[in-house]
Length: 335
Image (cartoon, rainbow, N blue to C red; front, side, top):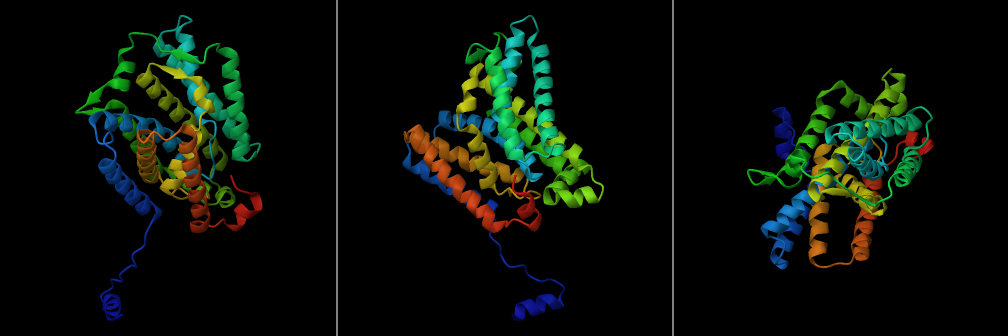
């Protein structure tokens, strides 16, 4: 008490120590890394660490896109569908006489259109994001399945830059990880230092107030989904570089829930207007270590999904307690 009084007299009041979700997640990730390193013989090997980093790069890029949308009080369940269909479409074009560069550019236009339609459905038609993106994901994947006869499409041989981003290293660091950090940094700077980024936070915090104040809430919302789709597409190209092709059945996996797990676990509130790329980074590291450890311990796919689902449920419950829904959310419903 005496120190606080003295601090007040000096104009310096000590803030009470506050434990953030981001700090807790970072600590758990560090503890898991140490425990797995001690307990699992294969964990702290060069090959496994490289595999862990490459897997984290794909998951992290998708989570950066998802986090970008969730900050604006939305959700994007189309990301995996956009990723697999967009890249598969580009590979298919490359077999029809297009150069691979031209095919990649046309594929980017396709996924941007998908993001545009999704954004219009949410911002203009005012369809709740979770329903709009769920339906759009089925439409995109269904359309892709009609067009492609094969589940797996392989990239053309001899594409040097694709091989480089998949298996190349710079100073011992996989290029895929460097690209992930570059995308994450770009989005972080975009959110923090641009007017558009401030609009995203304002719209996510209170959409009605943002519109009343004259902010272009609808165009901002639409552009969020376009950017999210392009990030998913970039993740798909990175994945193609890693495995030389794209498996469209990835849409039926639990990858989209892993992405959500990263975002919520990292501390981005589903209420919108809070969190950022740093939360995505810590969530990505934790989920990446957890999945890698469970794989080495030979947990079955079902067991891994059960554990991740329980963690996701706990993270959602924690988010609801830490960030209670405001009056507007109660009236208009959640995402």
